[in-house]
Amino acid sequence: MGDSTLHIANENLRTALRTINGATGGYTHDLSLKADQVHLGATSQPPTLPAVYVAKCTETSSHAHALGMYDREINWTLYGFVGVNSSAPGDLFLTACDLLNDVMLCLETSANRTLSGTVLDLIVEGDADGTALTIGAQPIGLVVIRIKANYRKRTGV
Image (cartoon, rainbow, N blue to C red; front, side, top):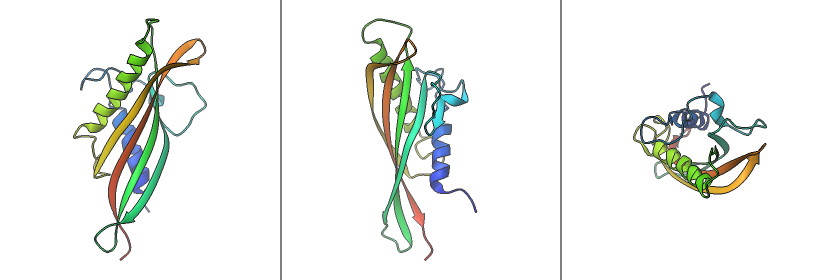
């Protein structure tokens, strides 16, 4: 038996986020350098900055108009982490804003909007927080990203 649509959608989300490379597409950050920069699930290891963690995923279903079909909705919560080499006021916040923008740009492109055909469409929203967390002595900016995606599932009718 094959992987579930939810399983495939999570893998495709990770693959899409790894295309943020800082060099093309108007991106500021580069999430393509190391595999741990885009991570599924929680980890106790400090992130390689910048990083995006797919932290939570929920799925709900409702009846579709056609018999034997269900409309499903996937909701993800992602956490992004950024650092800065500057101590100028506001730089950490602006860097977090750039990561939020990079994720939105990536997922709103025609290539990634359906997560390689897994979902019908998706919507992204998020918050950038320049309130510094710290890992060691390094201040870290936090980004919270919420993604909502829809797809249709056929059942045994």
